[in-house]
Image (cartoon, rainbow, N blue to C red; front, side):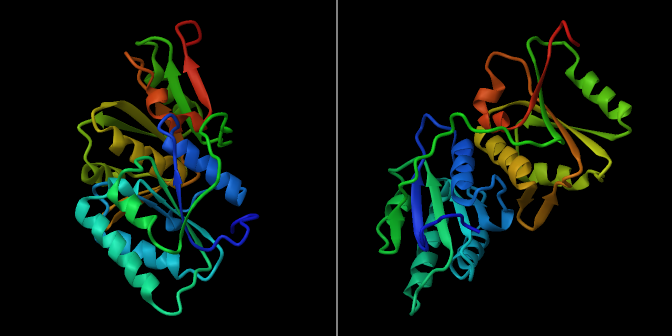
Length: 276
């Protein structure tokens, strides 16, 4: 439910500053609006070039015809393929042309590129309003989760993987290693996830590697860590909340956590040459 939402029952767009992290700003905004950092997959559409027309249409109908004052969020609509942007706008026109048109829910659309055609068209709809919610990704609180830990180091070769494996053995966990990086493909990621034999006794070691597919990596991390869910076409993976997740980030020429700031939401253990 939406906390102190002042009767918001329409479509809002909210621009995120280029200097701020999209994911962290969204988390901060949703916490302000609902009083919770919990984001439900059913009410979130994370857009990219692989988002299908079926996903778009189903989500919009679900959001606009919801009979409760619930917040639905659409993220990165400007990343949709051109043909799917057209489907998005045409679906909005169809839904809102039905009489009488009224909304009980609220749809918040987050974007960074204000010059994108889809954002421009959405803002021309009579039921649209620009949100006046001040959000920033700075000083966001860490999500208190006992099962998710970021593991980094101040040098290479300090044995992060060894220590994660040892932690699993010491705590009688089933250790599963899952490297992710290089040439990412969503269809490959979902297949690998669905092939994992994960249960509540599992420790999943997510070893993040450098990749030139930064947007795909960002989408993966947001889906898995925040939504606890990942999908592609008709395949779905749901992360059991009892699974212990250790996320190893590489030591290299750039700060991996700064590049993917969603990782800042979780507690971190730093392995050094002195404490390994």
